[in-house]
Length: 264
Image (cartoon, rainbow, N blue to C red; front, top):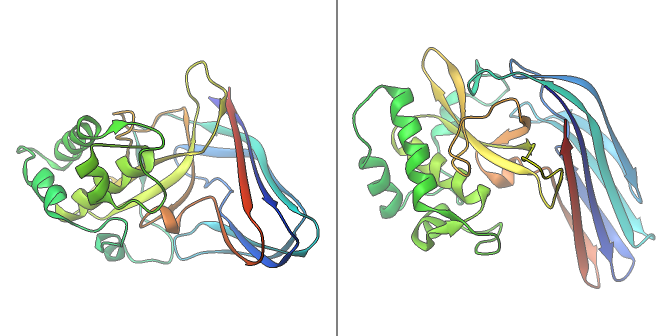
């Protein structure tokens, strides 16, 4: 399947900024499930300082801005050919060792609720247990936009029983690590049925399985990624793989607007 994607992020500032620095992880990763046909990133109101591969193999840009204008606009567009590989991404790569993905982070810290959830799973081989974990997380956390935010911890989302795809991924990752699986967060895009325009990118999780490598699980939708998914970046949690992040020094309020379209 060939998917056409446009992802526009706008930062509006109430007053000129002394300095702002944005980190972009907006370039899809080539692999067994996807081939990049064409891709470009345009920047209005800022300048590209440097680009590099980070420790996880994500193509990363640093974009700076200062003074005028009051708007920084970043738009990533392109086409990606996708294949259904039953969620199996394959062998580990990148500079970070595999054991690092067994380490918890602040957002994916292990609490009693996640520990109990992981230990409640039945017997089976690795794939069966991970699929059961995905289904359990999907059942325990109902999708409810606005019920959590970017700083919500996995244990908090599980206790609340509601959240968004970020929370589903964090809870799955924390539980999988408790079960001794290396696990990581994936940011990317999902073509939704009958809905080309979206207000945000998507997120899911991957666990490393002996003999298969990295395998994707999307608890928010209860499936492994198929041809409708495009992977952008990976990390141990949301903070390490979010598409656009940054810092600023200056006065006045900041408003963020995001528009994503994914269509065949």
